[in-house]
Length: 253
Image (cartoon, rainbow, N blue to C red; front, side, top):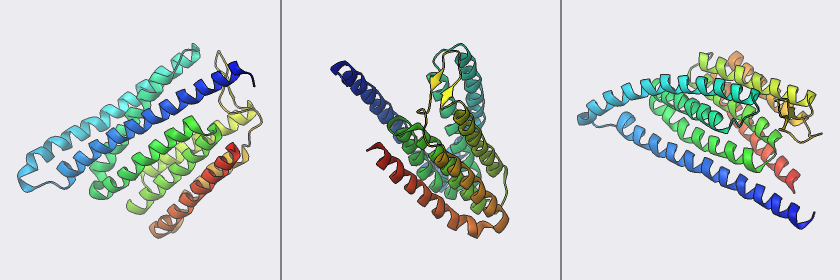
């Protein structure tokens, strides 16, 4: 590797690190907003009931508005991708809209229990951002599927079985599985007008596919067995995520 190649690689690493830090900063901001919601909507005083009513209306508006934003941004991203234009901005808007919708929905429906979960969920989103920019993209796919299974298991436990939240997460895991199979067929290339090498050629798809299938199996098993099983399976999938972390960290060395 000559000097020019080293400089180019160092520049790419600096850009990736900067973007990962921005992702963490966004998570910190969202955590701060959740702290305020927890104080004035969940743990409010009797003389603050008017604030609670206003916050409830705001959260309902955010739940709908975030969903509309996410859907519109995804359509925009697809249109730009077909024209071989950058899709970073629309994808960021889609993720922001999705995050706002999920957070507002969980707070409205699950109250204090949901709030406790959201504090951890935002941390998980930040970790996924770091994985995307720092680690291999196949780790990102595996962690995304496994992380969604943990979220689905939480809903199974606290919604006492099947719910539309669990159904949506199962669909999302299937989509990750479909993307992994598609990339395997295309050797990691996204076939846009200007092809994008998303996964490294010849990478190991076995771990990604195993993570997706395991995620589907544990959620379906929890639905069949019950909320108690969902509780213990959460720890199983968290252990799986830790194993993935160790595996891909060693792989980077």
